[in-house]
Image 1 (spheres, rainbow, N blue to C red):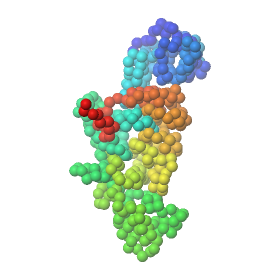
Image 2: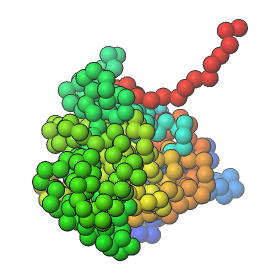
Image 3: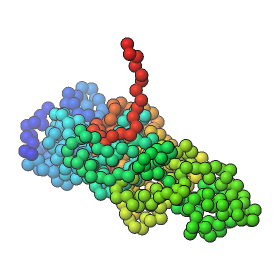
Image 4: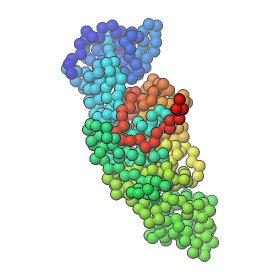
Length: 476
């Protein structure tokens, strides 16, 4: 890329930086800069720098522009680490397309997920693959394109990394993640065609030819969580809890299903054991379709999988089955955390599993495990990616641990303000634009993005499992 001609910086007003890291200037309104845009700054011919506009305020016929400095720009257009130094009297212009692309390369962002608007067209919107070693939060109103956009991101992660992934899918939106569309071309599509994706189905879908059933071995739940499932409280139900611990310890080596524990408990003359058996029966746990009944459990299938596992929980008729399936895998991942095998744990409609206000002991057990993974899992390679349209319903101790944000249209000013308080790295001016986002537009911010920016998400390589239902139209 050639040098930037300082004569092109005419018509701008003094740019001032008192700390060498941020800048302020007044610019003509017709310069057309928007919050998030990149600009080239010439500090009186001594140094050229690349900066990002973060805030704009109308001041008569001029606009007060504030932003931060990102990198030094050499005479040949190459980028280097910023050397902070105050200056005054500089000039500013919109950064050319080539320099914006050069910045992304310099920032080591190479996962192309869409496009970013620039003055002379658009440039690729890129993410850093290495940035997914932090927890990620995805949010957007219904109809904002959140499910589609998340699919784009997951495809690129699968195509260009070796990161193992599990997706807890409540609406069967990602069950076709392993099916690349015939018309999809290019390197990313070719790579996705080589990625093995295992889909575990629930409900009637599990009975289809060739389907892999999504099941849980009762023994794979921790003893504490089996007690939570039975609603046996260690303090309020001291005798039952103590008896349950003894029985579970004795039966752990051979018992696999709830039905087998019921038989063991029912055969015991101890009144406390019989009371626990009645809990199993009265709570309807024996009839749940999630139990393995001799089939391979989701935990075992995850360990056998090479790359990606989609846990389609949409077919479960009882909400507890969704929690049981999620809890069994989360328990196992945490129990084996010392192996330090990196895993991206994707949870769609995360407010159902990571709720701020658990309704019972089972929901509390799932939430507690996710809080633990959010707080301590990163150092073991357990990274969360949570997606929801209801951010206020997510447990705050999980939300606060997320270092990446992917925010689509959010109509509620309250939700936007709350997210702004949590994600301080997202510029307020870009957050404030969220209610105006069109379909597929998203704010990308945090460690996985080279800078906070508004992007238009790209095309999916694979099929989306779920989609909106069209309104029937009359024939005439």
